[in-house]
Length: 497
Image (cartoon, rainbow, N blue to C red; front, top):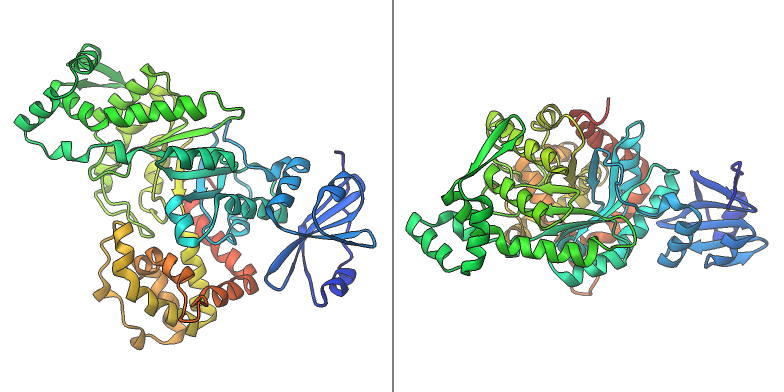
């Protein structure tokens, strides 16, 4: 389809059709042959507008009047956009650009993320959600990609973006995510990783190892026991004890990784970014363990795009890194060397707001890597609430306190609620300061599902409607807050000047 010079949309006519003022997203105006497309908003609802005629006009679902079709921003129309405007469809990061996961839990953050990315070569994962997040927000992966695609169209963003089925653990969920358009799978094999092995005493370790099938032990011992492997400018020896520990810890996970790769990734009809997550464990990933995994993935002919170790220190949600920065840098150097030697990129999970380690990542990796963020866009939305609707903020904050203990079952945080200043002691103008306090940030971060989905006795959402009314009514300010916050990430990571 030939693309012609952009034309304008008659907003006066649209105002009459909608019976009220319509906001036109100027960057969305696109001419496809004889059809002009644009995205508009009336109240809280966005619509796709098609003017003219031709194939795309005919294929879009909507109500036509005098050559102007008003179309819902639904899944079917998103698929039409994907066919005629390929930049609106998620793709894999085949050129291995530096990348960042920008999971948008609310479906409203992507325009702000796009503003932060302008002028960079970063590959964004705009559609990134785990099953847990989908359940907490009552969304589907189709909806997540739909929202990202329409946002890309809204902002005229043509540089490419990905869709990540994040922290998937089950075969059925992987199949569903790929069927719905995921271009990246983050495989969380934590259910196949035996975290108890690290706690075993020497005799217990030997006894448990002896219980494995003899042929399995023989295979690993012939390949790796007491052998020295060059890693960058250094070397690592897979001594007998380390090998026993790693075989016991990871051999089932490796089988699962291989199964998923061969079933879904290897023969896929389009490129898929395949990420291995081993960060959801109780202890940091020893460099010897990382080397063992890399060697096994290579032996099994499993090609991965990125791998996420469990780094030393604390990567808690929504706050900066907790730990010794010097030790982190030393540990990171080993993982960087292994990843480069085996041809994949490193991935840093729970990367939101880890500002103190971002310059270290840029200095040590000296190349492309992936960083995952997610809840930080939610927190910037709550910042907006604190700035613009103090009463709503106070009600949400109080509800978060009530449900914090429930939310802690799903997240590792060390929040001290006693350190969070009581609402009664904070004036309206100072409420926004809660968003700069680690304990309050974590309180608000992990309770998002309760704040978005809880209902009153009549079944009405407690906060969701008022929250989204404000978010959309103040969308320019929300995007400015996101631009500022994500740009800080990108600058410190070395991704943006």
